[in-house]
Every structure is written in C-alpha cells, then in structure tokens.
Image (cartoon, rainbow, N blue to C red):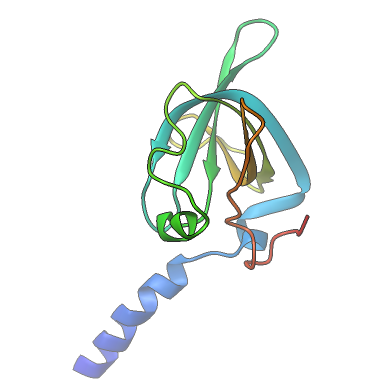
Length: 134
C-alpha cells in the first residue's frame, strides 16, 4: 500500500501539467497592445497580465501564460524584465475555453513580448510542448 501511495504522489504533478494543444487553440491567434498590470513569477508557469482599453475606454485584462520561471531565466529573463506599467505588445493564442478566469481575465498563451523600445522577448510556453512554431 505504501508503494502505491508513493507512485500515486509522484504521478500527480505529471497529470497536472498540460500541453499547448490541450488548453490553447492555434487557430485563435491574438495580438494585444497594452500595459503590464501584474507579473506572477510562479511555478509551473509564470503569468503576465496585460490590461488594454478599447475605443470606448472599456478595460480588458489578458492573463498570458509563459514558460516556467526557470525556463524564462535560461532565455535571459529576470524577475524584473517586465514591470507593472510597462507598455508591451503580446502575440499569442487564446485558450480553448473562452470563459474568463476567476479573476475576470482572458486566458491566453504568450509566444512573444515586444517592448516599447522594440526589443522582443520570446515567452514560448508552447515551444516544444505541441504548440505552433513560428
């Protein structure tokens, strides 16, 4: 019984991880220009929240999933690479489930962040995980 519980406990994190294709729709690309409103540097995937206003002034917030903090650091990111208030354009893909997350944000997967100075940072949580290649 003890061995069974150890195997079950070890497998739980594997079952919790998802592939790009399971959660995101490669036929629903999105490009969002807005302001970073929150950076959640957490495992297993970091999230960058970007808030934008439409022509009427209505705000929307996108929760962009990225790679893990460790993978982002290997690509040259730091915890401070993006800060609240930074203007960015994010290219990615919308989640298959179009319902807003519990905080009201729109769930998406980030491929690339373009900073106001034109610099680009690959976020790539879908890279090597079944996501579309560019």
